[in-house]
Length: 156
Length: 249
Image 1 (cartoon, rainbow over the protein chains, first blue to last red):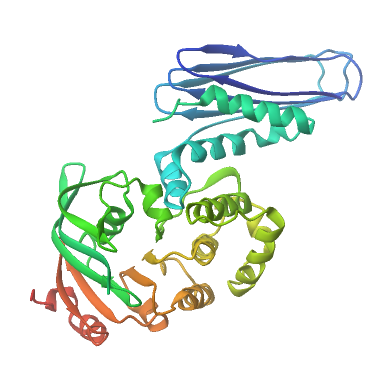
Image 2 (cartoon, one colour; image 1 turned 180 degrees about the horizontal axis):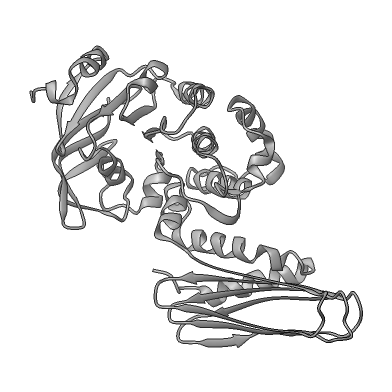
């Protein structure tokens, strides 16, 4: 059972190319990949991941999920999943989503009295929750703070 | 007392002028209904009041309790007590509904110099509202509006209204897409907020909702202006003659 959880953030003109390799050798092995990418300003985020199921890994299973969140309209997100399966009874699933923080979402939160910066952070944390909830508490708090620091001033 | 005084308001969306010298006074403690044909400017008016980014005010003013608000940020207007129930509430994935509601409530409490509520206090305060609106308790642990039915979204808007206790409540097509049970629950929620001080602006196409929320005034909006203001008796006339039968005063 292998697990990989990641959150990658790019802002300003940063480009990130991140991902993982999951190589299945043993029988009935399973793995999960949850990768979140956040792009702000002119940032570009790329997920590049390999899932390899060797011939020996009979009945192996993998689930991959790559979600991208765009803040603003000058950034981008790219997903390159590589799947190599030599076993015929394995199961490999890949899901990818891209969403954008919309003006409508921000306005909705602001109309309820939440200021713009808090509104963005609320949406971003909601997006990362699946990954952060896997972290030990102290580390999750750090990760959240780091995320906030990175995205500070990247809106508006 | 006048809560909201809209004076000769001109506003456009993009290049199109929608409000063309609109005058409207909303009295404290009264329910004002705005009716009018499609494209008359009803939604633009509500957007102009709450400071929506789509709307550009080119002339005129909006006074709230005597002070101009047109230069204020949307969140400031909200904190000062102006609430809009959206016609189409937006979905925000991953953002827990209860967390959002508590953040909004605490932003308001902080603004008013009150102590913030912790999660337990908040949940206690919510419970009665949820039951009154016929909302299942799992609705507040779901993501904000995500996958909610039309009726659930509107109930969630009313829940926010009940929690935030605003002074000016704008209901934009609150009745659209509601079945009779949801309409009744939503109306009861609204009526509960009537306390003789709060001001309501009910924007609607149909008179159906007005059977549940009794308005004090009916304003007819046409081509960006209020062309007639009358009591509730105007509804019957509108039903009979349509908007074309109303002559500008």
